[in-house]
Image (cartoon, rainbow, N blue to C red; front, side):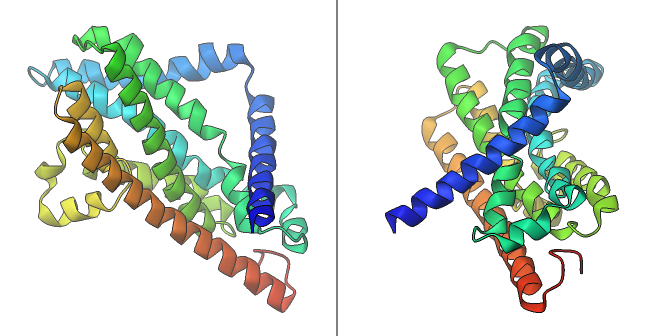
Amino acid sequence: MTSGITRRVRVLLWAARAGAADHSAVFTWKTWLFGWFVRMLAQVLFFATAGNLLGPGQARYLLVGNAVLMVALHGLFATASTTWELENGTLPLLVASPSSPSLVLTGRSLFWLPDGVACGLGAFLLLGPVVHLPIGLSAVALVTCLLVLVGLTTYALGLFLGSLVLTATDLRNVVSNAALVVMMALSGVEVPASAVGPVLGRIGAALPLTHGLLAIRRVLDGRGGGQVALLAAQEALVGACWLAAAVAVLTLRARRSRRDGAALFLT
């Protein structure tokens, strides 16, 4: 059993390494820092500036929400990058190998997580003073952990959506952008989750980001650790459910392809 777990971890790490190689082929540290990172900061700053026109405290509310949204955005990029194996023609090789294709695809897009956390944390540290948001050292450490959690849970959702559009790659950006807009509306990013009503509120509670963002707001407000821990546990549970759904769909599609002999995920 131990050897089986070790083998799965090795496959996951090699898949993550392959994805990181793709990322490094797209970005150098200069293009990432002065291009992509600055773009992310500009987006957060835009919403914070708009908040200044809405009344006291709104700029801070929108900055926090959209800084965390940057992490979720990167997690949802897994929807598109999950389909890269299809475009590269390597899916048939995956199904022919003894390793689980779902395990490979799960690790394939993990490179988005450190990217997203860096953008979200950078927005807090660099733009926080603009809205008079002081963050102590202990708060930075806790916020960073929660950002990692949000990245993982939204990555699970992105992986699930990617498993659905694996054979319809033209829809990958449409689906991920639609998911992002829904999360912006229902997860407390732009307006409190309580403002959307009980029905939409329940939908928002089933989405990643909702509980994690609320936990981060609690930390920045200096609220109790018990509330933060409960919200973090709820966020983790939501993410685990989406991850289980993603792995189940990927596994079923791989088994179907192996059974009928069709090229993996092409029918």
